[in-house]
Image 1 (cartoon, rainbow, N blue to C red):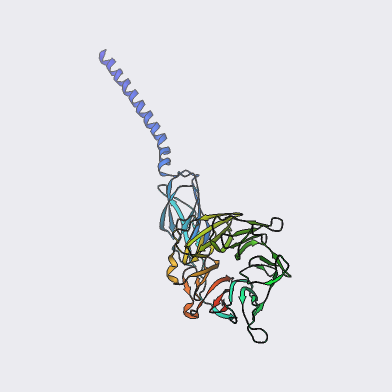
Image 2: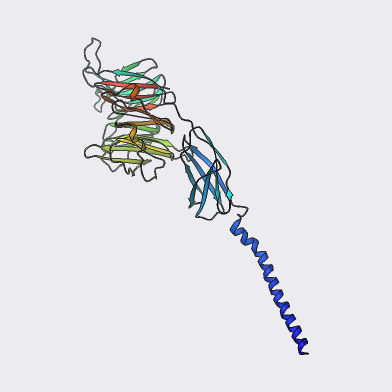
Amino acid sequence: MKNLFYFFSVSFLKNQLANKIFAFLTLLFLLLPQYACNTTEPPNNRTLLLKLEDVSCTEAWIQFSSTNIQIPDNITLYINNQPKKTINLTTVDTLLYIDSLLPNQTYKILAAMQPYNNASNELSVTTMDTTSHNFTWQSFTFGGIGGSSVLYDVAIIDENNIWAVGEIYMNDSLGNPDPKFYNLIKWDGTDWKPERIYFTNSQGQSFLSPMKSIFAFNTNDIWIGLDQLIHWDGNDYIEYELSDAVFQSWINKIWGSSSSGLYIVGNYGSIAHYGGRLVGWKKIESGTDLDFHDIYGATDTETGELQILAVCTRNLPLDKAIYKIDGNTATQISSTPIQWELFSCWFVPNRHYYVVGSGIYEKSLLQDSLWRNEPLDITHYGTSKIRGNGINDVFVVGAFGEILHYSGLTWKSYLSELGTFSGSYGSLDINEKFVVASGYESRKAKIIIGYR
């Protein structure tokens, strides 16, 4: 009887143990796929997406977006099936920057995550081609009789209509030095024709003044700066006399998105904004006494954001600054590690920024910590003005006749073919067909046109 009881007891215990083991194994079997999914395979709704934002000849800006990933994490960028670099993600959406590409090439780019082996869409990216360094040059000199002549600024309206401003001393009709200078010279596609534009002061008296700056929207919408502002509307020169409460300087440079969104800069930290007839002129406090030499603005085509920069400097004691202007507010931004003068700026918003003076400085984004000075060895001369058609078509001019062109890949100086001279180009304008620079050579005003 004891043996029988023992037999049933052991059998019962074995069955209970077997049932527990079976239940444990069943539970483990049910949970194992879930753990496997959480550690080795992505859920069905995880996505990685690449979208092309912009390209240059050697760079690409790609918008990366994702869903259902854990941050922080890493992605690896593959270019033509080869790993390019690993990027640490701190947000689910970010702008990726790729450099060291070749001009006019097509690349296949995708992003992948480990350990999931997730991959984004494959993005086809074709870089921009370079622009040619080949230009045909035609130069002109004016005046130098009875006084030192100079052209301070130039504006292209079209290929048969270019205006340059300054002061040019020439002979009168009898061949004698004329004490009355010309303050405007116009190109009609064949020749330059000098003009004298007279102005009226607050006492109603007519006077002749040098012109310092010019900015043209079209044939019938041209703005000219001296110690007041002049607007050519296609029929008349309309004078805007600025009060000392608004602007206390000669107008060194003009820039605007329209004639109802115009900015002027000058000496002693002077900045003013014109908002149209209903708004009028408003002084912008800069908080500096440095002299502003240039202002430039452009709209980001992706975001619609208008960005405006202005640069200012002083020789003694040496100082310089870069300002970002938003509406009627000017804020100084970093110029580190620039030590010397700054005279001009130009940029493509959120893509590439340049400032020039005693050197050429650049950065990709304004929030980048440092201005790079990589093209410093291109020229040994000071630079005074920079303008461009795009990232792959940029001109810089400066002292001793220096003219530089950036094709998107390389810089070229034209001094070897044009030669140096005792003088400087202080301004330039550019379009798709040609570039024009103005300044002085010895005692004469000088203009050069470069045809593509």
